[in-house]
Length: 160
Image (cartoon, rainbow, N blue to C red; front, side):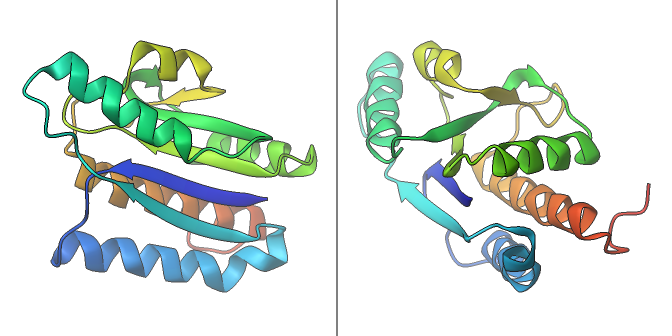
């Protein structure tokens, strides 16, 4: 199964980018043994529209254009479900074992994801009730993906 993060906005040089890269590299080191083909990150430009609804619509269209068929989508949304790390690992393993080709993680811009995109998601995932900057969400997501892999591998990184 291929994991793909589609995020509105770019990570500029700095600590967030370095940390995101570190978790991605760590995932790559153990992922193939677990049946994960790759972890890809696709950045979608932020809309320049002055109108919030138009921004969300343009960003949603750009995200949807990047989602291949035979995919399950996880929408990062503060109104979503709060899963613990083991539950996320179980969900990824179940989809992998069911032959899902792609698991897509969608991270919206400053105005969030459209209601239509959230409805299409197989899972809406929240990192608590707080609203987080999309750069931080990406770092936290990559850490959770790496942690899920370590749980599935029986690696001591995750100590519950």
